[in-house]
Amino acid sequence: MNLKNDTSSLEVIGSDAFSALRIKVLKGSAGLAEMIVTFEEGEPQVISFYQTMKQDEQSPSIVLKGNEKALRRIAIVGKTMPDNVEEKAQIRITGFKKPKSAK
Image (cartoon, rainbow, N blue to C red; front, side):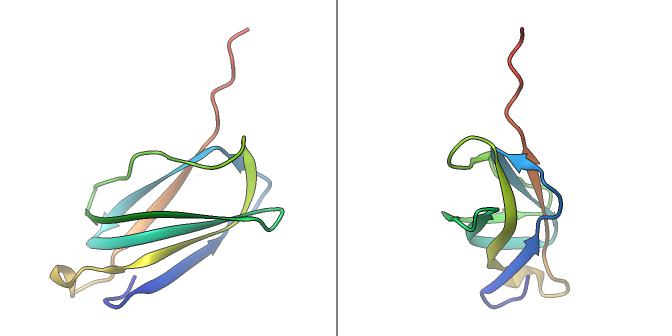
């Protein structure tokens, strides 16, 4: 992520379906404004959360609409915070499936 508001996106490869996502800052600090999740069918979900996160901090689970759905793309709108001008912030997005019910 850059010092100015920036949109970073990634393609989700494979047919994995998720019910929730979590963001973790791996390096630096980032000011995150929103996440745009595009499902395989093309339908987007915009999640606004306006949060500043420092290295090793993570968001709570972000529940996706519907049941588990296959994802096509995830875009994050945010920026590297000015207190970290030496390097760009790096983040990781982790997907979670619903737990299978016990039989």
